[in-house]
Length: 289
Image (cartoon, rainbow, N blue to C red; front, side, top):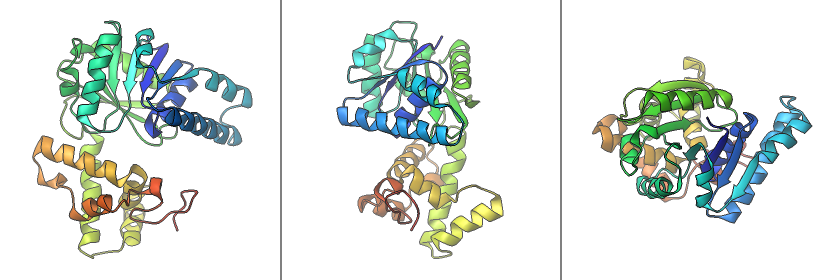
């Protein structure tokens, strides 16, 4: 199982998942509707692997072999060739539902359909297929080649066999896995992490501390490698806002109601590192100014 994997979406997450799957000696087809996105993903994967070579984590010949295992395409129909599909598009439920309807008609009945989502309901996504037992969440963390965690999320009807299969694949990708037993908003990690980032934004809004001191306090006081506002910039303030909205509506819990400051930042285009401006400003290399 999992010798051939199809990934839908060649953005930051999709390209990272393609890389770790290829590093796990699996054949990968990375699909996107945009040729520009595919070209960018190819360069991103190559750059990431070159950094691994410099750090002596892989050899030059291993880099060449890994790249050779990844095929790039604009054709969703090629998902008929694989054991596992991992959808990794933007966190938009309607978009994911549309893709899963298409995958249901393309993929063989034994193909597992996974979604890389940080907050959206797996059971809802599974409901548009005729194989809810084979639909599962595979929540990777960014940057995928560096982060060790893979959160596997059961839908209401996800089978034990499906969970075991994606656990095995996660291990081959070099990941440590945890299993979310109930399909509730935010799962395990974001249920905790989103509330933590929201609290930091509230503290900033109320003028209790500067962004720098909030992050420094959480790094030094709680031993976290990155402060909550730095993490929000890395994730993307738009992604954070969308995740908070999804969890708030799913749980009806005020702890996840999106802060006004976050909404205004997204409206102003302050989306974090990807545009060099979020809670902090960044230079062209992503270094904080």
